[in-house]
Image 1: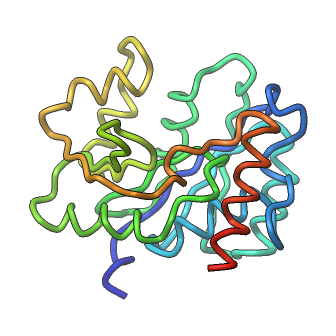
Image 2: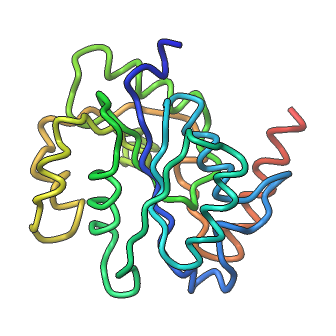
Length: 207
C-alpha cells in the first residue's frame, strides 16, 4: 500500500482534560472513543502509531490494544503533570519504529479527513521537505508530516516555545498544503468542541 509505506504516526494523549471536565480520549464519538477515532484516522495513511499516554494511561492502552493490536504502541510520560507537550513528543519520537516520516497530532483531533493525510503524503513525494503542514485559511494546522531526519533534533531540542520554536527554526524547510478540511481546526478542548465534533461527524455520515 504505497500511501502507508515507511510512514508512522505519533499521537499525544497524556493530559488530564481539565478544560473538558471529562477525560477526552475515552469520550464516546460515534461507535468508538475519541482516541480510537484519532488513531484510526492516522492509520489510514500510516503503518504504525505510537501513542503517548499519561493520565489514565492504562485505560487508554487497553482500549487501543483491543482495537488495533500491534499496530499501536503506547509509551508513558510519567511526568505529564509537570512537563509540556514537547516532552511527550520527545518520548514518542524516541519510541517510533524505523520510518521515513511521521504524522504528529494531538489525541483530541478525531475528525481529520483521510484526504488531508493523503494530501500531505502527496506533497512530500514532490521533494521530501522536512515538514509538511495542512493549511486552513493560510494558517498551519495539525497534523504536520515530519521527516524522520528531524528526530535527533527533536530529541535534543531545548529552545524556547516548545515544538513551535523548532518549527520556526525550520520554517524555510516547510511546505504548507491548503486543505478544505474543518477537521484540522477542531481539537476537543471544551464540551462545546465535543458537541461540534459529534455534529460534524454525523453530517459526514449522512452525506
